[in-house]
Length: 88
Image (cartoon, rainbow, N blue to C red):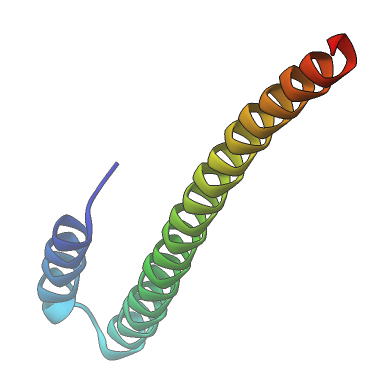
């Protein structure tokens, strides 16, 4: 997978190579290059948002696991106390 820097480098090379083309073709390539850059930036933003969401989800799961373990410990302790009180 190409990173952001590699994409920009290849896109700039394409734009440089389009310098010798006739104006209509050059204009089309420049429009496509601009659109590609915009879409690449939007994709990078969406990937970053997804990464942030995953990080938040991981943190939420860690809190849920911690809470579950604490609840299990409390449940076990209460059952033990209940058993002890029933034996008396």
